[in-house]
Image (tube, rainbow, N blue to C red; front, side, top):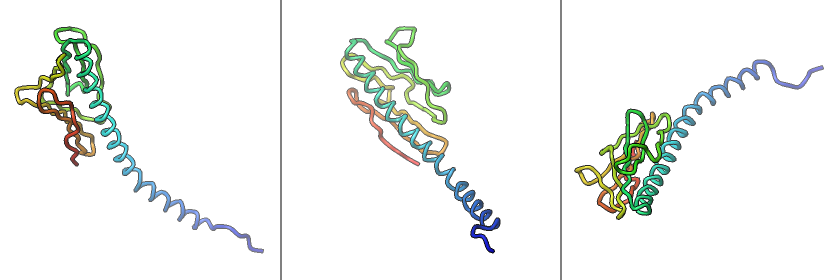
Length: 149
């Protein structure tokens, strides 16, 4: 009397095929997650910058954003104050570079950049995906200017 079922070899082959599929797909999921995290952070940062520009208008006080790329953080100050209004930490795995490292939002809605007349905030992840937030002109808001690989 024969029993119906799978042999041990057939089960081992199925397990090996599944292991190969998992081995191939896990790195793709990590890259997708890293890119999603970068895109979410760029959108969040763009929203925060617009908020702080508007807050300077409402409070009728200049607010300065200071970006510290080495510490992976950025802080906002009422211009001339010692204590930060708010400090943020860049998510792990994301690199933040800014030129210039200080941006001031004025009560009239204007933005003071460095001498170049524009600001570039570059974000990148370990997968070499790069997003740049940029502003040009005195009254311009921050826009996602480029997405590169």
